[in-house]
Length: 160
Image (cartoon, rainbow, N blue to C red; front, side, top):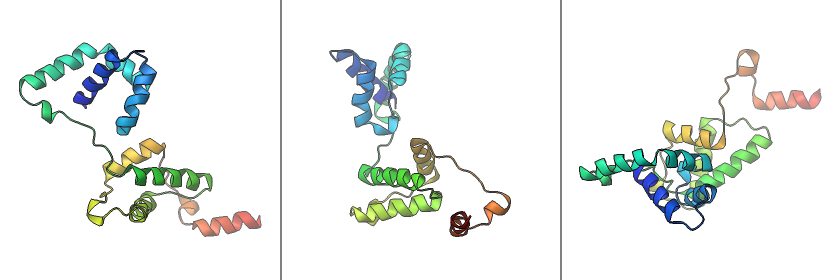
């Protein structure tokens, strides 16, 4: 992450227009997991001296290659398919949960030909990041709503 910040800041300073919004848009395509926006670039610029000092210290210890980098998704086409599916499912009122997300990711990975040994393990960290990316919230159902199947609820809504 620190090396990425330095890279982004360096590029921003050498760019012709020095627009924070354009810098964020440029690097958001390269590092989509950072989810860069103009306020992030502004914050980095405000603390730029601190970031350069930290990077210089890490570099002086010969640990520059060990600075934390945000892992980029290995199969962005699968995540894009899942993003689109979630948007459609939510619009259709489909209850989306952890198991469904895992099944759909695996289904889309198989569809685009991702070998099984290259498929993600879909950990809690992945799920948390994906939910944050899609702005998904988890709701627990209590009482009768927790026991009713989606099909039964849909049938009752149609007949009312």
